[in-house]
Length: 620
Image (cartoon, rainbow, N blue to C red; front, side):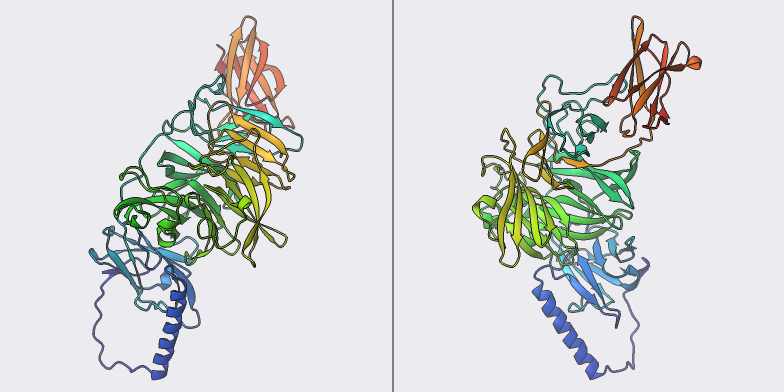
């Protein structure tokens, strides 16, 4: 039994047909010529070779299929993706495993109507070869395509991060929100030239609570979202989803230097809009979560498989981490694209030594950033090959490599990077610029300090020149994490990863802002974005009476438009009157008033309009 575009099973058997019309020999010759040309094109594309034209007369379409034909690392729970034409036009899809036989399943349409997936009813068997045949003719692959299912090596281990070392005043506490205990931050430098936008961090070592955090331009807390114990967040940023600004981040657990979790989308009222999961039985990793137009998301994942590591003097049955890039249809959860490092980059490209124990996974590649290009290609960064790669999104083929052992471009010694993070390609006039956070420390230590690089690519001559380098003072050496964000106006905002700092440099390389966590915390990345939030919750209030004075504490987690607080007091809940109005100061504003039995506050905007009112609380 197989599946049709409607999702209904149908029999493979067809009644014999006597008296068929003989095909015109000229038609046969044309078909053979077309197939031969298609085969040449596919061979020229290398192992990926996934772009095929589904023949339909004058309405031929380019169709990308995933797993890529010839892939060797498909998960047992893989779905088979067809992108480039409506799924209703695919007709019958026959999927057969060399061990498990014919698979029934459903053909599900992507939300944009430009493709869909065959989702099997049961998983494939590790090690088997899977063949896919369509009633629609694939140019150059009339009989379809095939891929191999890898043997999974179990889940990524859960290795909780150690809590940050304690230091005086390293945690913020609030009377009005005793449930919040975020890591404290201090601003060590701030000039008038610093960007006016907010700062986005994900403190990941507690020491009491971890979670996404927003600071205002002065370093004061705007919003903190504590996560359950053992859960950490990464990569908090502002993105666009279905026409509106949203907050996005990853959350889950970390182990072996990678993440196992899910990607979160919140609206400007801090309500959950979507949760994005990895496809094919994998889990979303912490390193990248990018929303694209049309409700699509680019994410990273890691897949431990048994793999032959003998080319790097390892075991023939080593546990190797396949670095995975997936594009997900947020609305349906279906896979749209997948790229696997083990299909395209050999273990010999890695600078990472084999692990000391055979039971530890070998993370030879370590994808840590993705950036879509205007033409649809992707630029991905791999920490452990010291290289960035431009990937053809239709085929998965590597278009060029920057850095590492097999660089397409020649880099001068001062531009060579190691263990880099967050590679971004920018176009300035006729130049192609690339920004890189160069960690420089693995181990081993390759550079004496970490730095933010700006490089110029000469695509014609395949050379690289160093445009700009930014260092922190005092010097920092980061073993992992970090990012470099280009800001409007030419400034750069650098998160120093494992180190507790985040810094803004102007175009001349001068520091115009510098901040750090108090104590030994860190954030995977640090960003600046404009943000406006109006919480769906109401303000919080607490009153503490000492003698003849009640100090009223007012806060509203995530609110950005509060200009003043109006305090209401009384000896009974029904007799509250306005007692004071004061400007908002920081996350929590303390306002002294004559002693009162009950208190409440109103949040006022810059025009004096009431944004929201707190509950009435008894003063303590």
